[in-house]
Image: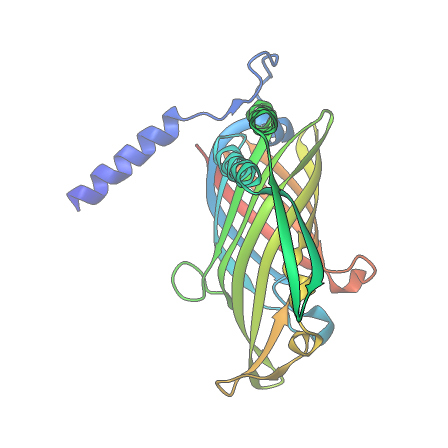
Length: 302
């Protein structure tokens, strides 16, 4: 009991001391607001919270009335270093691989006697060209860390530990961007979620997988922030049509693979500089407005 009280006291003290701040040091001092969308957009802070949703989200197949309920945790690093470091590392690794790889490969075949001879000529980058590539990579990383906006958004779903929904897994996006009054952000995302849903009395497993590039346009309008996000899922192109319909699984359960390029429209705000609230709708296809999914989030800023 003593340990619990000590931990609770420490948590309370840290919560009282930590204050989300604005990313731009030259930004004018803002009056205290009950609802603040600008702090949601421009502030720096770590958010820990919960998420719940349902309907035609990307984790189901709304056209087949498979719409799992989701519950879980949210961890977000707004305008911090997490997304910048991850994307910067990927740029650095990509630049190093490009420098060490061949510049061009040419093959030439000819007949010599009774044999077909193939000669391959590989050309590598010169030291001067490698230096230019290193400089370009360095400038890209410098621009990344100079960008005013970044986001690391992690959603963790559970059926039995910290949630009572039908989904279990994770959904992670990294964003970096700039622009005012309308901001544009992009980056990298991946995730894997499986859901257990009862369809007409038959247990059905929904497998959702994601690796791709998210794009987001957002703006702060006084008390709220509006964001439109599109997730370009590269894995959709590698899933057969037979996997996208309900079919018998290896364990006797029905299963279906859910892959789409979903759109998310979210409205969020910060209450008294501490409580983050967000509500949004999801569409796997904009042409089908009757198959919308929804989600709500609430969290504390530190």
